[in-house]
Image (cartoon, rainbow, N blue to C red; front, side):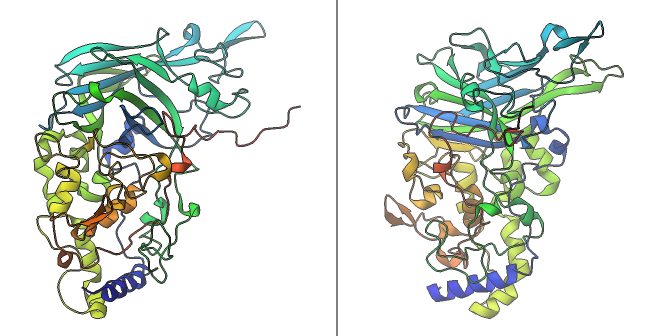
Length: 529
């Protein structure tokens, strides 16, 4: 198809999208019906990348985020983790779609003296209704009445039956989770200085070099124009300006333009992060240097509400742990998996993904676009047949989500399964040089070779779903045909699909744990009496 015809097709799409009858296409972090009932164990994002902090290129950073849409001012209890749950990061370093290393986090919340902070009021000692009574400056500060700690266990082999060994903090007796950012008055020394004290060195059994660990509230950095997307896409989702990052050289009339005003999470919400920085040599095993990464949460099978709950026992639990949330590649459960199978996907392990593979090989989202817009678009560009990619099975999506790309991020053994795949031998790209579009943007250190916080995965996945990989992509500056499909298979594969919510790695810190300190609950200093 001629370039001119592709642009006409894009203009036709712009006019049609403006009518507003397009399905949702972005992550809400509430990806399956059942997990909406359990936000404390809702896994929102997973990042895995070779550390690009200067001098740390021999490490891999893994971040698993939980508890979607945290409002900075949600006191008095804020966002503790679920002590009944186990939170896990899994590593496949062979390629057989099973975990060979698991890092298991278990949390505990304890009240000071089993009561929290108490005050004597009229001769009676009573617990105060708040978690704190004064400013915080260090872990387990005396002004904090509820302290949250956690343990980390490395499991080698099967996550439940494998060999278990404790990961221990360096220079302290326990791992502490910082109190959330209630506001300026609660942290007179500044929240960033307070939270940095909770970045721990960690001794991993069998690993000669210490790791780093941080668990705590962070500012959300998932770029998405969320509300309008679920309002039947109340915008034109093609680049409407000649943006040097998001455009394709020719703007689409009426298309959305990149703006921070389109952010629904960045600058507005927080999230709870479990972050680890681990030496590469301790992750890769005897494989080829590529690792598969995913995160899960599990709860006891039986959970009964107590009729007379206490702080330590609001419920009675028992039975085996049951997986309730799973996340590796972004947007899979939102954009790919059908609604009837979303809870099943959250409960499944990668080794069982063949049962759901049809959603990748024969995706429904492009088919919906085709059903809505084939006739009018073909009326503009001519011809007949689908305007969505027609290469079935979709080998381009199989490579993206299930196998990795040969020579880039395929494990030694190739087993189709959903997980992030990271080639630890590919050098990190310095923060200032990172492409928002990762591999498609000529940056092999970015998504889908792992995922960095600055990678705009919404736009990348949109473009890949509509056939971008059927056209040559730049690899080391050279246009390269991946051989997965042909341009004729994807009539609108070169359209600059976007939700208009930009991402930029320069906006987050260039050091572990990378995501910025959380937004504060009290947004401005208050005048003191």
